[in-house]
Amino acid sequence: MPYFVNREGYRLYYEDINSSSKMCTIIMLHGFASSASFFKAQIKILKEDYRIIAFDALGHGRSDHPKKLYLSKNIRYEIIRDLQDLLKYLGVKEKYGIIGHSLVGGMIAQLICMKYPDDIKFLILLNSGYIMIDNVIRNIFYNLLPYSIRMSFLDVVANSVEKILDRTIPFIIMALSDSLVGSKLTKDELYMKIEEQIFGMINEINEYDPSSILCPTLIIGGRLDNFAPEAMSEELHKKIKISQLEIIDMAGHFAPAQRKEVVNELICNFIRSFK
Image (tube, rainbow, N blue to C red; front, side, top):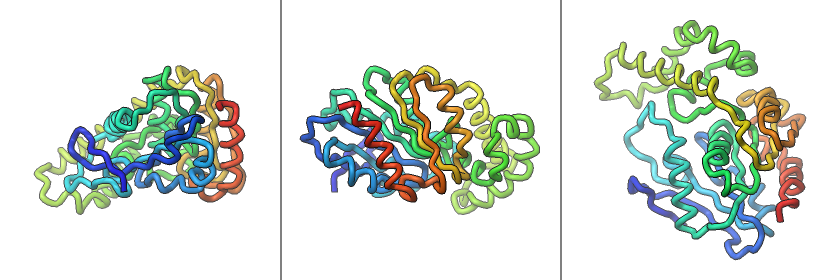
């Protein structure tokens, strides 16, 4: 299996499919606790014409899993850096399209489009949004929130965050119990670290503005998505100038696998104009 070593010395699994293709190169970014294999239904269709590059982020899939868990380390920076290093390693110099799934893969895809606008041909966001769930603390906190709060995340959480934290922090600590064995943090220090991450998460959302994404963008959401509600896809569509919005009925957060025929058709129709 192909691996490349990142700057920290970890082995990261990657796939470079149909590398001799003269058509567009497409980068695929998976979500939190997922892997490149999530896109197998899309890869099966796209690999016939396009070069596909996908990799498992550190701690995911077939890549190395560090023994030490950094609870408050935000993985977005390392993923963006590792992707850029992988593209150099594979000799990718042309513009590429990028597909990102969920609140990690999709948000990182957005950040790449803003950081490297001249490198991007198009962007496809699958079940994505404007919230960065980029470390363990934030992921557990978000998973504890009911759907009604996720639908209006900023309005509800920003105005009631202290009350919500009072109720959720004990569960966050419970979920992290195995990782905290041997930790020298006091209870107050642990609470402070968790609160710091959640407040930072909210501040980042308030400051986030995807309107600087200027490449053609396809946004696909699921009507039954409880993790990244369709309202998030609608909000992205409003803010990204050149965007097309598709909400799929009877599809949840894993629409690319649940409704693969519909999702694949939308993706292929969108990409055909970029040959």
